[in-house]
Length: 203
Image 1 (cartoon, one colour):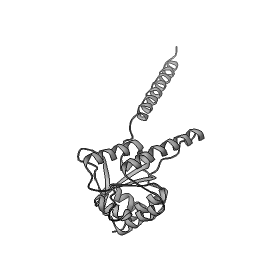
Image 2 (cartoon, helix red, strand yellow):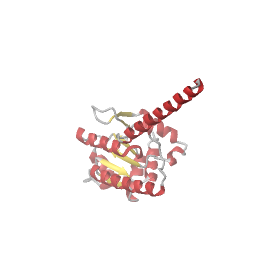
Image 3 (cartoon, rainbow, N blue to C red):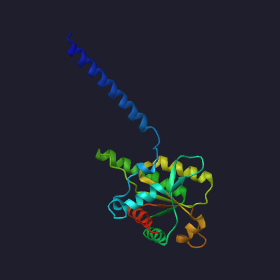
């Protein structure tokens, strides 16, 4: 057998081994929870195309802190401005606000099932962008923020969380009056999400 034949055989063998390793790695990755990281998220197209889109990205990636003391997962922090409050009220009036962690989790699970069915029927996997936003009060117990982290890792790159320098009473009062408490509000529509994110660029 010539040296050229030996080299060709070796190359084919290496290609098969590499393909097998890549396939195994992909399968293992599919079984792992999404490694949620702000830098890995794709913002809504409305934000990316807006003149303030780069400023939104800068805020989201520089004004952060760990979601709870013992985690590496960081989320953006923001002071609730008048424009952000207006964006929340507008979303609420349009029916695009979900209140409470339990309700958000239930709706995200239903949406994931629906998206999965559409992708399987079409045979095409859609590109994933942020389309849901969790607005978090700043006075929750550690257990609450651990549950939020589980939600972020479970539903991956289509969900972003922003923690507000405000307690549940102040956040809830914006939408539900003086007796309304809200530790978590989920914006459930990409246009509402985009409006809130762009509102974060106000001083």
